[in-house]
Amino acid sequence: MVLALAVRGAEPLILDETHESRVFGETRHYRIFLPPDYTASGKRYPVIYWFHGWSERYNKPVARDPGRNYDQGEGGVYGGDTIARFVGSHDLIVVKWDGYNPRTPGETYLRPYNISPVETDRQFPLYFPELVAYIDSHYRTIADREHRATAGLSMGGFMSFWVAGKYPDLVGSASNFMGSSEFFVGPRGFPVEYRHDEMHNNYDGERTRLVMGTRDFIRFYHTRMNAIWKYTRPFYETAEFDSDHGTPHMGETLEFHMRAFANPLPRPDVWSHIDAYPDFAVWGWEIASDRKQPGLTVLEGVSPNGFRSSVREWAPAGRVLANVKVRIASGRLYPAGQPQVVTVIRTRDGKVRRATEHADSEGRLHFELDGDEYQVGVGPGAILALGDFEVQDARWATDGKPVSVKVRLWNKGAASRSAAPLRWETPNPNVAIATSPHGLAAIGAGKSADVALQFTVDDPQREVVKLYAVVATSRLPIEIPTFPDAPAAKDFRIADGREFTVYQGGIKRVPLTLGKGNGDGQANPGETLAILLPDGDAWRAAELFTNDSCVNLAERVSDVWSDYDHVGASAKYSLPVIQPGCTVGHIVRMLARVQFPHAPDHRIEYFKVEFPVSGSGSATTK
Picture 1 (cartoon, one colour):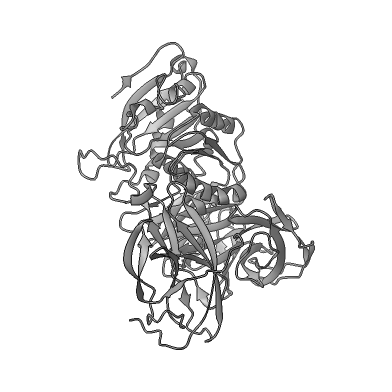
Picture 2 (picture 1 turned 60 degrees about the vertical axis):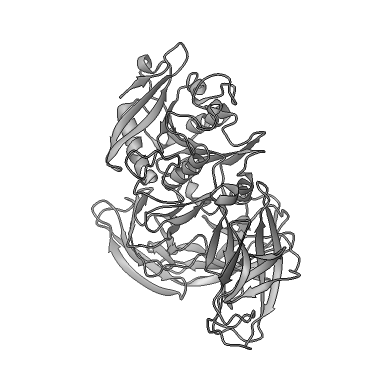
């Protein structure tokens, strides 16, 4: 079905069309904006895929306010700064897909995309490659990633970044108008929380842009996201306008994509990726697993020389799901049938296995792992990779104070690495590296060595610093969370199986039993705790940070605030375990982060928390 809406002079041709989706097993709609000269020009055009927001459709503006039609027309909130106006004067195609996701046949349902909650089997990211293939085969597109982009508003802004991060091999640039920073996504039955804050490394080889509004109800979460992305993502930009929730200065963002088409980034030599689906493909690699529980597959530093892998409950430091079986097929990188030396190191205990594997007829190597963390090397020589780090002489890295870090450096190759110079560098502003270039001692095959790093961050707004260890031609990245200096908590409670009145959903006071233990309000070995900070006549559970070996911080809980601020995001709190072998009298020091509601400008506060490990009672759960 085709409906021509506008064919006048320099205005674009706007068509509403359908196609049959094999992924969804049903007819799907889309709107396409074609340049005015499309019919006669014979030219090929780059494509932007536009993802609409809540209450919209491919052919309908925001239901509550038709004056916010960013598709076409003059006047209204945007004064005619629309998709149609831009396509009317640029060599560009825009495809606006339909996020309609009815739970029952014919249902009128305003919530698109099957995210938070995941209610149907329609997986819109899995549909995206099918739609791209259909558009490329039916229209004169420039059918490569360098001339393909995603963009969207609100929930569609979230989708734009999620889809672009899932398919960096299909998308060269992505923009996001005021999208939420997180939603529950993925397979029906075991969805997982997907936070853009933590997925920044999915965008290797892409240009990205976030549009913010000074009066937007999501802006607090955008600021938090920027505290990470600005310091970890090259080719990332933000623009803030005097606007509420919407698409201000549409033309400027579409122009961002035109610049990206004109100057695309190359395919990265080394890339990282986190995926919510048990099975996926990226950059020619194919990954399959038997995971049937919420989780994320994490690949880091992927290149022909190997990779780092794990399956986790959440990123970046969630509990590993070691019971998951993972099969990884590399890209077509190696001579068919030729032997390759493969070294696999389980990082938690340094256990090494080495074998000679032969690339298949397509030039792929095949790896069978579990969800534990592994460093995998391919090749007969030495291969260096950074592993975990530990802040020395402190429990966390504090802004404005010298930070000393011990970083694990692995040789995941099949030959020893001779001694070599090592130096540290950073692309981040306001970071002073105190470590002078020095010699790196020889590292045996499959072995590791610890190297020192000292730096100071003069910027309390950021949440991370990115640095590189440079050894010969290798430039190895590491990201270290940093925190503002904080006062000691004047009052706090240890919840170890005892009921307290705790805030949930931002503003609701709820009787809640947190932790598992004897409920005596002390930290006993083997207990699971929550740390509670006072807020009036109730308590707020804190997200916690420490490098104390007596504390396992692998469990993080999301307190969803959607009913309060309507964003879809959450506050976090931790449920640490005091290790069973921890010595009685040991002093635990942690940094507590608490989110206080003040929509739309919530407040984050930090407190130092200190307490002894007690042996006064049994850790038995009440």
